Length: 213
Image 1 (tube, rainbow, N blue to C red):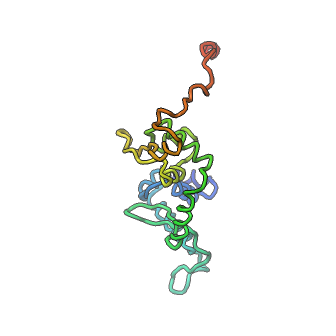
Image 2 (tube, rainbow, N blue to C red; image 1 turned 90 degrees about the horizontal axis):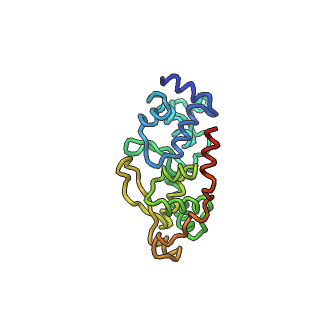
Image 3 (cartoon, one colour; image 1 turned 135 degrees about the vertical axis):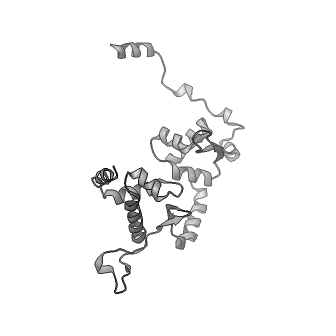
Protein backbone atom coordinates (compact mmCIF):
# COMPACT_ATOMS: atom_id res chain seq x y z
CA UNK A 1 0.00 0.00 0.00
CA UNK A 2 2.79 2.43 0.93
CA UNK A 3 4.57 1.70 -2.36
CA UNK A 4 1.35 2.40 -4.24
CA UNK A 5 0.89 5.64 -2.31
CA UNK A 6 4.41 6.78 -3.16
CA UNK A 7 3.89 5.94 -6.82
CA UNK A 8 0.69 7.98 -6.85
CA UNK A 9 2.40 10.98 -5.25
CA UNK A 10 5.18 10.85 -7.81
CA UNK A 11 2.63 11.55 -10.54
CA UNK A 12 1.94 14.97 -8.99
CA UNK A 13 3.99 18.11 -9.75
CA UNK A 14 7.11 17.85 -7.59
CA UNK A 15 6.26 14.33 -6.47
CA UNK A 16 6.16 13.13 -2.86
CA UNK A 17 8.50 15.89 -1.75
CA UNK A 18 6.15 18.63 -2.91
CA UNK A 19 3.14 16.77 -1.47
CA UNK A 20 4.80 16.67 1.95
CA UNK A 21 5.68 20.35 1.65
CA UNK A 22 2.06 21.20 0.84
CA UNK A 23 0.87 19.42 4.00
CA UNK A 24 3.51 21.13 6.14
CA UNK A 25 2.34 24.52 4.87
CA UNK A 26 -1.20 24.09 6.21
CA UNK A 27 -0.83 22.27 9.54
CA UNK A 28 -1.27 24.51 12.58
CA UNK A 29 0.56 22.31 15.07
CA UNK A 30 3.59 19.99 14.84
CA UNK A 31 2.90 16.63 13.20
CA UNK A 32 4.91 13.48 13.84
CA UNK A 33 6.62 11.52 11.08
CA UNK A 34 4.06 8.78 11.63
CA UNK A 35 1.14 11.18 11.18
CA UNK A 36 2.64 12.66 8.04
CA UNK A 37 3.37 9.21 6.63
CA UNK A 38 -0.19 8.07 7.28
CA UNK A 39 -1.61 11.18 5.63
CA UNK A 40 0.52 10.72 2.53
CA UNK A 41 0.17 6.93 2.50
CA UNK A 42 3.93 6.32 2.43
CA UNK A 43 6.38 4.76 4.87
CA UNK A 44 7.84 6.64 7.83
CA UNK A 45 11.32 6.13 6.38
CA UNK A 46 10.31 7.92 3.17
CA UNK A 47 8.82 10.83 5.11
CA UNK A 48 11.88 11.20 7.35
CA UNK A 49 14.21 11.29 4.34
CA UNK A 50 12.03 13.94 2.71
CA UNK A 51 11.87 15.99 5.93
CA UNK A 52 15.64 16.02 6.21
CA UNK A 53 15.91 17.02 2.56
CA UNK A 54 13.48 19.93 2.99
CA UNK A 55 15.15 21.03 6.20
CA UNK A 56 18.53 21.24 4.46
CA UNK A 57 17.08 23.07 1.47
CA UNK A 58 15.35 25.70 3.61
CA UNK A 59 18.66 26.33 5.39
CA UNK A 60 20.47 26.83 2.08
CA UNK A 61 22.09 23.43 1.83
CA UNK A 62 21.78 20.55 -0.62
CA UNK A 63 23.15 17.04 -0.74
CA UNK A 64 24.24 17.07 -4.36
CA UNK A 65 27.70 15.58 -4.81
CA UNK A 66 29.41 18.77 -6.08
CA UNK A 67 28.28 20.57 -2.94
CA UNK A 68 29.78 18.08 -0.48
CA UNK A 69 33.15 19.05 0.93
CA UNK A 70 36.06 16.77 1.71
CA UNK A 71 34.77 16.11 5.22
CA UNK A 72 31.47 14.92 3.84
CA UNK A 73 29.26 17.83 4.89
CA UNK A 74 26.97 19.68 2.52
CA UNK A 75 28.03 23.26 1.89
CA UNK A 76 25.75 26.20 1.32
CA UNK A 77 24.56 26.26 -2.29
CA UNK A 78 21.77 28.81 -2.08
CA UNK A 79 20.49 31.49 0.26
CA UNK A 80 18.55 30.32 3.32
CA UNK A 81 14.78 30.81 3.20
CA UNK A 82 12.90 33.14 5.51
CA UNK A 83 11.33 30.04 7.05
CA UNK A 84 12.71 26.79 8.43
CA UNK A 85 11.51 23.29 9.17
CA UNK A 86 11.82 22.38 12.84
CA UNK A 87 11.32 19.19 14.81
CA UNK A 88 9.74 20.48 18.01
CA UNK A 89 8.31 18.31 20.80
CA UNK A 90 8.40 15.25 18.58
CA UNK A 91 6.60 16.88 15.66
CA UNK A 92 7.51 18.73 12.47
CA UNK A 93 6.27 22.15 11.42
CA UNK A 94 7.37 25.13 9.30
CA UNK A 95 8.24 28.29 11.25
CA UNK A 96 9.55 31.71 10.29
CA UNK A 97 13.32 31.79 10.80
CA UNK A 98 14.29 33.19 14.20
CA UNK A 99 16.73 35.64 12.56
CA UNK A 100 13.71 37.56 11.29
CA UNK A 101 11.79 37.63 14.57
CA UNK A 102 12.04 41.42 14.91
CA UNK A 103 10.88 42.02 11.34
CA UNK A 104 8.00 39.55 11.60
CA UNK A 105 6.97 40.96 14.97
CA UNK A 106 7.00 44.51 13.62
CA UNK A 107 4.92 43.48 10.62
CA UNK A 108 2.34 41.72 12.79
CA UNK A 109 2.05 44.62 15.23
CA UNK A 110 1.85 47.29 12.55
CA UNK A 111 -0.66 45.15 10.69
CA UNK A 112 -3.10 45.68 13.56
CA UNK A 113 -4.02 49.06 12.09
CA UNK A 114 -4.55 47.87 8.53
CA UNK A 115 -7.96 47.06 7.11
CA UNK A 116 -9.14 43.47 7.03
CA UNK A 117 -8.90 41.65 3.72
CA UNK A 118 -11.97 40.29 1.98
CA UNK A 119 -10.97 36.78 3.09
CA UNK A 120 -10.72 37.92 6.71
CA UNK A 121 -14.11 39.66 6.56
CA UNK A 122 -15.77 36.57 5.11
CA UNK A 123 -14.19 34.31 7.74
CA UNK A 124 -15.19 36.70 10.52
CA UNK A 125 -18.77 36.71 9.23
CA UNK A 126 -18.94 32.91 9.27
CA UNK A 127 -17.62 32.78 12.83
CA UNK A 128 -19.98 35.52 13.97
CA UNK A 129 -23.07 33.75 12.66
CA UNK A 130 -22.04 30.14 13.39
CA UNK A 131 -20.20 30.54 16.71
CA UNK A 132 -18.88 28.63 18.47
CA UNK A 133 -17.33 27.03 15.40
CA UNK A 134 -14.12 25.18 14.52
CA UNK A 135 -11.63 26.16 11.85
CA UNK A 136 -12.42 22.99 9.95
CA UNK A 137 -16.10 23.96 9.79
CA UNK A 138 -15.28 27.49 8.65
CA UNK A 139 -12.93 26.07 6.00
CA UNK A 140 -15.69 23.76 4.79
CA UNK A 141 -18.16 26.64 4.51
CA UNK A 142 -15.71 28.94 2.69
CA UNK A 143 -14.10 26.20 0.62
CA UNK A 144 -10.55 27.32 1.46
CA UNK A 145 -8.06 26.88 4.29
CA UNK A 146 -8.60 29.60 6.92
CA UNK A 147 -5.78 28.86 9.39
CA UNK A 148 -3.78 32.01 8.65
CA UNK A 149 -6.92 34.17 8.58
CA UNK A 150 -8.06 32.81 11.95
CA UNK A 151 -4.64 33.64 13.39
CA UNK A 152 -4.95 37.18 12.05
CA UNK A 153 -8.44 37.63 13.53
CA UNK A 154 -7.21 36.27 16.86
CA UNK A 155 -4.25 38.66 16.85
CA UNK A 156 -6.61 41.52 16.12
CA UNK A 157 -8.67 40.57 19.17
CA UNK A 158 -11.80 40.00 17.08
CA UNK A 159 -12.18 36.28 17.88
CA UNK A 160 -11.06 34.05 20.73
CA UNK A 161 -10.80 30.44 21.87
CA UNK A 162 -14.16 29.17 23.10
CA UNK A 163 -13.13 25.73 24.33
CA UNK A 164 -13.09 22.43 22.49
CA UNK A 165 -15.69 20.47 20.57
CA UNK A 166 -16.79 17.59 22.86
CA UNK A 167 -16.75 15.09 19.97
CA UNK A 168 -13.76 16.01 17.82
CA UNK A 169 -11.68 17.92 20.36
CA UNK A 170 -11.20 20.73 17.82
CA UNK A 171 -10.74 24.27 19.12
CA UNK A 172 -13.90 26.35 18.81
CA UNK A 173 -13.90 30.08 18.13
CA UNK A 174 -16.29 32.90 18.99
CA UNK A 175 -16.30 36.66 18.57
CA UNK A 176 -15.03 38.91 21.37
CA UNK A 177 -16.37 41.94 23.18
CA UNK A 178 -13.96 44.00 21.07
CA UNK A 179 -15.76 42.70 17.98
CA UNK A 180 -19.07 43.88 19.42
CA UNK A 181 -17.51 47.23 20.21
CA UNK A 182 -16.21 47.64 16.67
CA UNK A 183 -19.59 46.62 15.27
CA UNK A 184 -21.40 49.02 17.59
CA UNK A 185 -23.76 46.38 18.98
CA UNK A 186 -24.40 44.99 22.44
CA UNK A 187 -24.57 41.29 21.55
CA UNK A 188 -24.40 38.95 18.57
CA UNK A 189 -28.20 38.78 18.72
CA UNK A 190 -28.17 42.27 17.21
CA UNK A 191 -26.32 41.15 14.09
CA UNK A 192 -28.34 41.70 10.89
CA UNK A 193 -30.60 38.79 10.03
CA UNK A 194 -29.49 36.78 7.01
CA UNK A 195 -32.85 35.31 6.09
CA UNK A 196 -34.10 38.38 4.15
CA UNK A 197 -31.05 38.08 1.90
CA UNK A 198 -31.41 34.35 1.15
CA UNK A 199 -33.12 33.02 -2.00
CA UNK A 200 -36.84 32.46 -1.58
CA UNK A 201 -38.27 28.97 -1.12
CA UNK A 202 -41.23 29.52 -3.40
CA UNK A 203 -41.64 26.68 -5.82
CA UNK A 204 -39.44 24.27 -3.90
CA UNK A 205 -42.15 21.58 -4.06
CA UNK A 206 -42.24 21.90 -7.82
CA UNK A 207 -38.46 21.58 -7.90
CA UNK A 208 -38.54 18.29 -6.00
CA UNK A 209 -41.42 17.01 -8.11
CA UNK A 210 -39.44 17.78 -11.25
CA UNK A 211 -36.34 16.03 -9.92
CA UNK A 212 -38.33 12.81 -9.48
CA UNK A 213 -39.45 12.75 -13.12
